[in-house]
Length: 444
Image 1 (cartoon, rainbow, N blue to C red):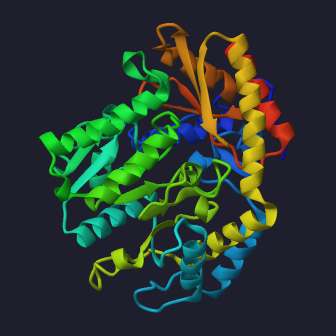
Image 2: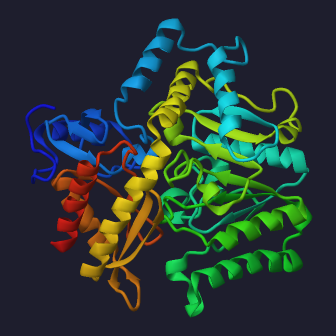
Image 3: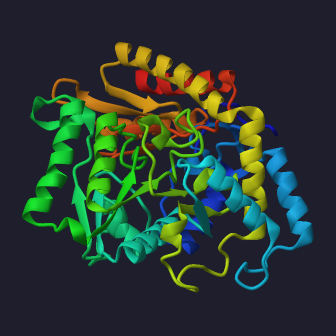
C-alpha cells in the first residue's frame, strides 16, 4: 500500500484525485446509480482497500457481499489468468467447454438435497431469480408468485416486482407482474401487537393460509420466492418454525420453494447455505455474488424434473456461464474447502456479535443486534422503548466511519440498519480495528 491515511486515521473525503474523478462521474454517469462513499478504489488485498489518494480502508462491504474470498485473491486470479490465456468467450450454446460442466457438477454436490439436480448459469442474481421463476411456472403450469416484505431480488422488470422497497428501487417503473402477491416477513424486532418473534412467524404463515381461503387460489401459485435473510431489507433472521411451515405450505399445495441465496449464501451464515440453518431443503436455489470471487456469475440450481419441464432454447443467454467466470467460481469453491472458510465465518461471526452486543449495552442508540454467522445487522433507534428509527444518526455514523477508514453500508426500509459484509478472510485484528472505528463513530 502507498502513502496516505491508514485505517483509523481521519481523512478528508473526497481526496484530490477522487474529487477529480467524482467530477467526471457526475458529468458522465447517471445520478440514478447510487454511491455510498466518495472514494475511488485503486487496489485491494483481502479485507483492505486503497483509494486513488493512497488512503487505506478496512472493507466491511465486500462489494456488497461479492468478495467473501477477499480482494485480489491470488488463487482466484491465477485461475482467471490461466483461463484467459485459453479463451475468453465461446457461448456454451455454440461450443461447449469443460469448466461450465464441472462447475454445474460441483454445485449439484454442495447444494441442499439428495435428489438429482441440474444447474443453469446466468450473469447476475436478478437473472438467476428470473430463470427460477420461468422454471417454476413451466413445471407447475401456474402463474402466481408469493414473495415477502423486506426482500430484494433484483432490478429487472420481474424482480423489481418481487423486490419490496418502493422508493429506492421501483418507484415510477410499474406496473409490475400481476401474478405477484406479497406477505409480511417475520421481522422479529418490529413484531406488531407486542407478540414474540415466534408468534409473529406463526401469524405470517397464517396470513398466507388465510389468503388461500379468501383471495388467492393456491393451485394458481407456482412458487414462493424467499430471501431467507433479507440483506437490503435489514438482515432480519426469521424464526426456524416460519421457514419450516413455509416448506409445508409448499408441499401441501404443489408450490415450489425458491431460495434466494444471492447475498447471504456461500458460507456467510456459518453454513454453506443460509437455508441449512433452518433444516429445510428448497426446490430451487439461486446463488450469485460471492460464488464468482469478483467475476459476474449466477447459478440457478433445481431438481432435474423441474429443469426438464422447459423445452430446448427456453433457457440460456449469450454470456451465461462465461468460461472465465466459471473458472473463477470453481477455484472459489476449492478455496472455501481448502481454507475452511465456512467454519471461519462462524468463528468471525461470534467475535463480531460478542463485540456488538457489548456495544449495545453501552449505547442506547443501538436498538437491536441480530444475525447468523457473519450475516449481521445492527439497528439504530432514537428511543429503545418506541423503537423509532434513526436514519439521520445512521447516516452520520457511516460518514464518520468512511472518514476514518472503514467502508460500511446501511440498509433496511427505514435506512437505519448497519450491515456487515466483510470478507470471510478478514483477520481478527482487521475485524477488531473496523469495529473500533464503528464504535468510535457511534460514541461520537
